[in-house]
Length: 288
Ligand SMILES: C[S@@+](CC[C@H](N)C(=O)[O-])C[C@H]1O[C@@H](n2cnc3c(N)ncnc32)[C@H](O)[C@@H]1O
Image (cartoon, rainbow, N blue to C red):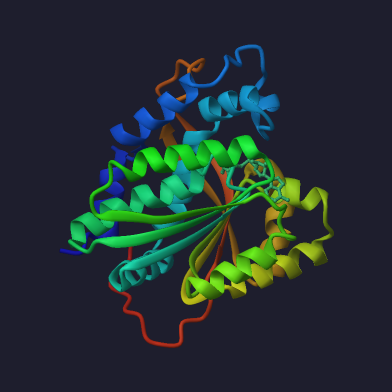
């Protein structure tokens, strides 16, 4: 039976509050414990991690936040239908640009695993990780591999790491797209800011349009960014002819220093949907 959007949301949240499942929480905690203590670092110092210390702080403070935001982005009707199409085809290829410790990829595999299990449709997943920091690629690779061994309905077939900075990595991304018959999901989670520091808006528009041209016609592009970057998110959304939405999400807190149980976070989301040439049904109608 194909789960509905409502059923999936209910599974991933507790009374509307997003929560990690036991497997992902264990993998996250294990990765945090394997890194040197970062107690002296501020939140700001961990926001864009560059080494093992700041990576630990990042995992502690930001992992869950970014993870839920990617899942929430996919669980909107227009994207969800496309993901179902990909699962029915038996193959999902993900490009995770500025992946950090593979946060978006883990979030997507977690979602795919639940949906494909409930549809009784095993799915093969290929993941392309692109980041400039070796510690991020190594941590992402490690966490995905641990997760891979616990999955039943998802077979992670390939994890390809690219350490060339985006957009120079486009040569490799295009080559992989050609080999794997294009991407189903291209995700840029919290990487707009470092990218914008190196490029003009026109250059960003150009490189992102090229990246999204490697999506299948039924593919999905997702960009997420924090609430403090409103003009960046809105300007890019409009340059990509895509909608930019301000989203509020309630989640359980996983930060070891924060004693609150749950918190509301606001962020921006840009959804890029190539035009579908064949008809796709519109049975799902829960808009969040
Ligand atoms: C804030 S982290 C976000 C990590 C992850 N995507 C997430 O949602 O948690 C930004 C990441 O972008 C990476 N990055 C910065 N500039 C980049 C570039 N030009 N190409 C690829 N990755 C880049 C950084 O190394 C860092 O891991």
